[in-house]
Length: 352
Image (cartoon, rainbow, N blue to C red; front, side, top):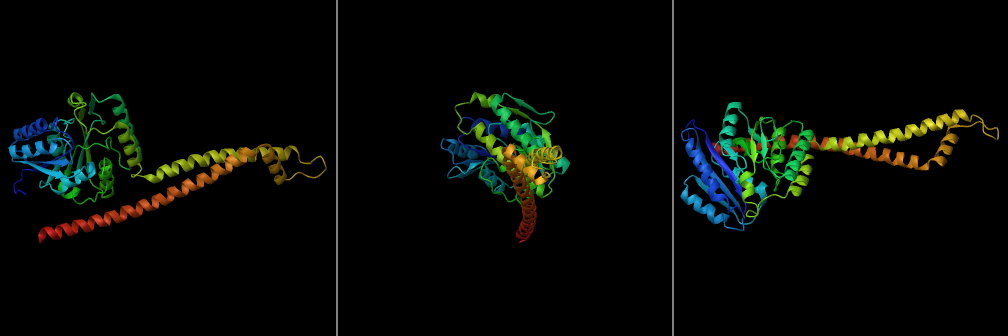
């Protein structure tokens, strides 16, 4: 790593079947970085994630053409999570910028993200089209609705509130992101990084950005790497549960408890009213509460059954909520300790 004060950037770009746009977009990135000569040192790492088209060949040609471009090939498609981990592991810069190869976030975000990371002493800076100042341009309606819905769901579930959890375009402080143990193989890796960063009390900053699919739409049908909107939606919804799973169990439990209490209290009221109305039965025996309850059951057995089942279900969900809260705390404590040990081991290895 250079000893100069100029920031050294590693631009990590996962690629899968991107032959239609790869050469032109890498040139665009290189031209932008060259225009900032003197402000940054840089390298570009292309992760060819087992592409089945000519992406790998084109990437190798780019590495020959541009001395600051490196290519790492996965023999098979290992999905986004592992592609990013490969990029993080092989980055030599002190700051990592992850870009989408389609440049749906323009190249000037490299500068914006980097400057914000340095200025704010952050560990992660997110590019967000959903916060004030950001825009979504030319994204198909269905995909836009799905993406906004997933990110709002995650914002509701997470303890720290951000506008964009699923976006890949981010800046990372290299020593921080290399210390985070990641296990997700697919698109859930981006929410996973934020979740684990929150556990580690990392400083996370969000800046507005424009998500523009104008150019991407030109190549519709020529690229095979696009994530299916519906798959991404359900993947994102499931990822939302990692932040605070207990609130979903407890939320359902509280609703069910309210419904059961309404049903059972209504039955209790009818029983007491019936008890007061018929103090003495026709055979001269004084009416009892248990007898009134029995009569009420004979009149409305379905209310007792529904109320009882709902009450039991509410207890079950509330119990699951408390158990998931306990498990979450255990996991976060162990993860925090494991990451601290990993950092210490890395420091010892670097000294040696």
